[in-house]
Length: 77
View 1 (tube, rainbow, N blue to C red):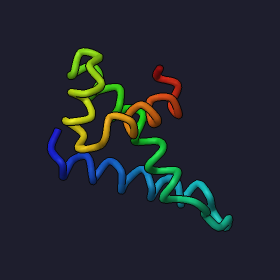
View 2 (spheres, rainbow, N blue to C red; view 1 turned 180 degrees about the vertical axis):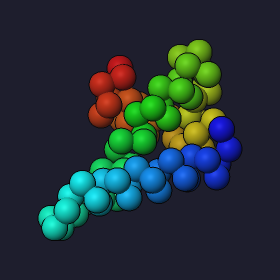
View 3 (cartoon, rainbow, N blue to C red; view 1 turned 120 degrees about the horizontal axis):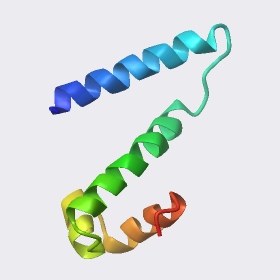
View 4 (cartoon, one colour; view 1 turned 90 degrees about the vertical axis):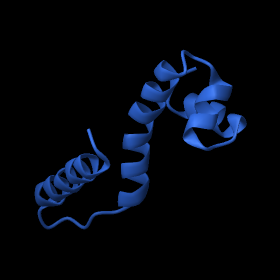
């Protein structure tokens, strides 16, 4: 799947989310999207890195301690 395809999926999902809200005002959309997308990204990268957090952090371009914090937030540790 290309970057463009991922962007299309996110865009379509948000459009559906806004439609489903109807007249309700959305809130915290950015945090909701990041948190929702972050878990499958972490799962896929950790699988690719064969559980090696240092390698996974390098792949993600983040600090290993940041990765550990995110893994804990998503219940992946």
